[in-house]
Every structure is written in C-alpha cells, then in structure tokens.
Length: 420
Ligand code: NAD
Image 1 (cartoon, rainbow, N blue to C red):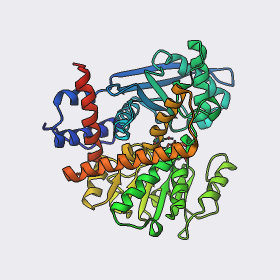
Image 2: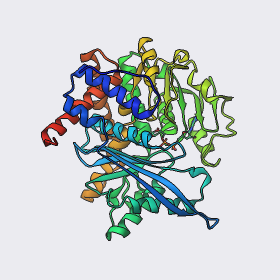
Image 3: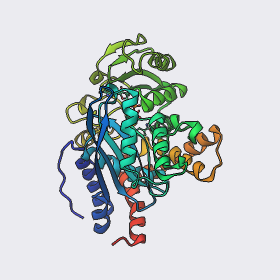
Image 4: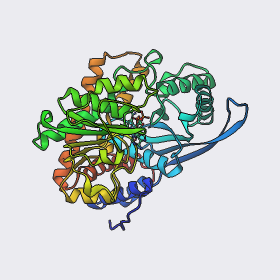
C-alpha cells in the first residue's frame, strides 16, 4: 500500500509514520491497517481532588485502549505535566506492538493523569489515584484492561488502585494491576525487569555487532526505575557506564561511575542525583552526545532528534524509554549505520514480567526470583532473535522489523476474530 510520510514530533503521528513504513514494506492488509491506526477506545475523565489546603483542583485523566485483538489490554499509568491525549494514544499503540513482540497474550493500553506529582503530597496523590480508579472502574478488569506503573507511578500507586478497585467491586482483586508490592501479590523480579531486559537486548545486539561488552562504554539517560537498573546491569556485565543523568543534571566519569554508589546516593537524596560527586557535572545534551559505544535513553520522549542525531557518537542505542528517538533522527542514524534497539523491543522485559505477575495472581502459585529472571531472559532473547531475523529478511532497521513482526501477529488476531 502507498502511504505519504511526513516529519513531526507529535508522538501519535510519529507512531503512525513508523506504522506506515512497516505496513508498506510488508504489504499489510489495508483493513488491518485501518484498525491499527486508530485506538479502539479513548476515555477522558475530570477528577476533582481535595488538596491539602482545602481547595478542590480538577485533574485531567486519560485511558486509551489501542487494541484487544490478542487479549485484554495492558499498559501503565503515567503522572506528568506532559501527559496529553496524543501521548497516551501513542503509548497505548506501542503497548499493542510491544506485547505482540514479547509474545504475551495481551492487547495494548496506556493511561495518564496531567499533574505534577513532585509538587503533590502523598495524601493528595492517594486521593488522585483513588479518584482515577473510581472513574475507570468499569474500564479496568482482570480480563479486560490491566494497568501497571509508568513514569512517576510505582508499587505504592498500584496498591492504592488494588484497594480502591477491590472496595468498589467487593472482593480482593490483586490481578487488576501489575507492578504491585510483593505482599499484595506482586512478582519477584518485576522492579528489575525492564532494566534487566534492556541489558539482555543490549548484550544480544553487541554479539551480533561482534563487540565485547567488557570493552564497551555506555551512557544512560534517566536514573529512575529503568535507567538506574539498566546502568546497574550494564556494570554487572562489565560494560563501563561513564555517563548517567536525571532531571536535575548529568554526570561523566571516564573511569566509570560506581552505579551502586549512585543508587545509594539517590536513595538518600530525595530520589535525585543532585549533588552527586561520582563524576563531573555535564548537561543532559552533552550526555546524549558522549563518545561511547552504547547510549541508553531511559527517561523521556524525543531525546534523539534531527538537531542532535548527527552529533551522536554511540554505535548502539538501546531505547529503555518509550519514544526517545524521532522519525527524522531515525533516518539520519540509519544512514550512519547505527543499530537502534527500538523501545517496543528493548523495554519489553517489564511487561513480560507483568504478564508473569498476572499469571501468578490468577493461579495463586508464586515463582522464585531466579525462575522469573530465567523465563524473562529467555523471552527477551527470543524476542530479539525474532525481530533480528525479520530485519535480515526484509533488509530493514530493527525498528521497522519490530513493527513488521508485531503487525503480522496482531493482524492474525484481528482477521481471525472477524472484527469487521
Ligand atoms: P521513573 O519515573 O522511575 O524515572 C524517570 C527518570 O527520568 C528519573 O530519573 C527522572 O529524573 C529522569 N528524567 C526526567 N526528565 C529528564 C530529563 N529531562 N533529562 C534526564 N532525565 C530526566 O520512570 P521509569 O519507570 O524509569 O520510566 C522511564 C521511561 O521508561 C518512560 O519512557 C517509560 O514509559 C519507560 N518504560 C518504563 C517501564 C517500567 O517498567 N517502569 C517499562 C517500559 C517502559
């Protein structure tokens, strides 16, 4: 099918551009394309919440279900001032493709609330999370739509959702979310799963590139769940992490940053690296452009763009974050021969272990951590191989190959269910 391409950095349009490229190469059935380019449900809610000062503030909340062709929809909930309809739509579609690549029986969804969680008290965040859960109580369901943590949400928010949902529905329902605390039915290995998966995918790519991890340098942007754990697992593999960063700043140490010390520092420093002494202070822009072998953007969208792509020196980009590279940057980097492990493959370790958590909740049988890690590593290596093989078959980038692999699989679900 012939499609027009255009360059924009609206995340949903970026997603559509990538979908278009894959659809054209694989000659995707136009009916399936029609279904895939539009989310199946979009819910927007206004959430009045009493602030600690006694005043009421109304927050905007979103849930977008992109597809349920292969199973109940799955996707995290993000709290940020940047949350908007198009961002949530893109993230929901990426979840559909990510679950298909990870070979887990889910569709894709995403949720978010436009708020500044760093400026809100714990009590305000709890009231906001409960209001959102109440508003979405007919959308969420163990066999319908299963949320999880994303940026600025974690086990604490998931516990509030379990509690609120269980009260509304009248029965303890831990399987309604994944990424819960262990004592409420969370899975061992879930907290580490995304960063560990980024490391596994990186090692697989380095093997293909015939690079020895122990001789590689890495820079990791973002030092939250994904970034810090990716950096930690890189150093366990002998990769020297010379650059790390968070929203407060970036740090460079050519001798290698001691990641355990950086994590311990963050734990005692209000969750940030501000004031970290284990490296020289640099800017986040400089971090992206460091002379390293591996760049792992693990924070935000649109970090590798048309304006800085030519200055990127890494040989491999492992996208821990969702959407860190724009389509315009992709073209520049492809021409330079850079390998990019796309987000929908690289950060799929998290949703894989979320799936294990959901299975454990449903069966009531809980795995040991080694078992979870072993299964997740195997899943990730297989996903990487599947996408790599498609990239060789069609002579395309790993990103386009990932979309082709996912679309082939979702198309089977759409067609065989006879939705149209
Ligand atoms: P998080 O809230 O735990 O951490 C985000 C980190 O990014 C923080 O260290 C923050 O300081 C940093 N950051 C924010 N703005 C920055 C900036 N301008 N420059 C540099 N750093 C900045 O979030 P997370 O869970 O680690 O998620 C990060 C990304 O990974 C998001 O794109 C998310 O969608 C994606 N992701 C997360 C998971 C998961 O399991 N948590 C799974 C798949 C994908």
